[in-house]
Each structure stands twice: as C-alpha cells, then as structure tokens.
Image 1: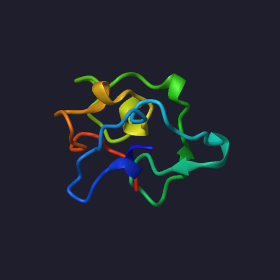
Image 2: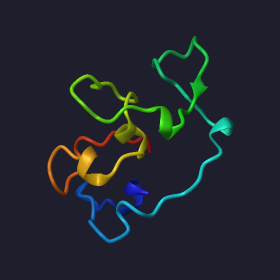
Image 3: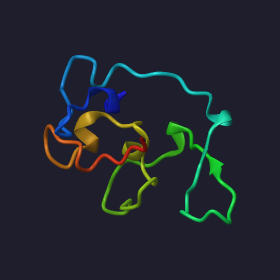
Length: 90
C-alpha cells in the first residue's frame, strides 16, 4: 500500500499502518515484463515468500522483497522518509 501513502514530493507518510496495511493479490492472474523486451513473454508476479531481502546483491528493478512491497519500511528505504529507493511499478 506504500504508493497510496506517498505525497506529491515522493515522501512516504509514516503512519501506524505503514507496515501493517496491505491487500491480497491473486498472483496467478498477473504478469510483468522482467526484461523490458516486447519480444519475450511476460512472467508471473513472484510470491513474496520467494523473494530475498534488499541487499547489495539485489540491485535490480524487481529482484528483492522491497521492490514488490513485501518488506517492512525500515528494510526498504535508502533514507528515512523517502521513496527514493523503493521501486514500485505505477
């Protein structure tokens, strides 16, 4: 739900719901373009339980839990109060 809590300057509003409010998604119904190529098929959206935490070894766009909104705020932010390092598709 983080994108819904971001203000016009890109700052994430910290509330008591920041790490506790979310929504369920039927993952089998959704795919994404993992390589940016229109000539390859899209792949299924990953399950949060299969994703590693954000680290130096996960610099890609969709390769860790924070990229998919599957991490707590404190584990996903590059700087407190900003969305600068949270890569969520709009």
